[in-house]
Length: 213
Image 1 (spheres, helix red, strand yellow):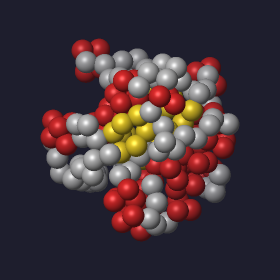
Image 2: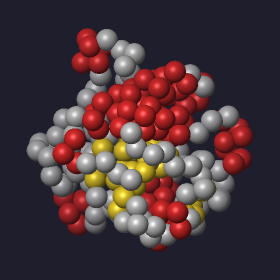
Image 3: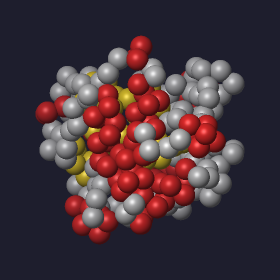
């Protein structure tokens, strides 16, 4: 996996969490917010909390191009998912797409780099931007409120008929407000996807978090 057992044990693993938004709970189930307004997916998996050293690892991977850390983080997520074999496997794994402009600036799609080791470990087909694409280069989400993030992403993604009838897992690096994942999930469902799961490496927005992106 690229990390020793002692270092892995020191990571900020999340225990019981809300099935739909992955926020830590006293016991597995649904949090009050998701009872009242459930998201457009059936399950969210985010095994690690967005605090040191996970925030630093993701920052180096995403903004400094340390792609080997993406492999490590993807393997950690895959190990968590592999331990939950009772859930079954989706028909395809979709990394959250980047707009071509942002992709050109960064040089890689961090979600796609994370998804490669996950897809390989779980033997799930990895989909590309012919299945779902980002068609609007929206401003960065950092610093926006949840409502502003949702408005910022209206119409930003489109999905093709390739996804019709498929059960898909959408993969991203960090789950905070969930606005990006919701925009992708809605585009997939409108194109006929049979169901959506959300897989991310880390969960932000918890009381224990340090500085967030």
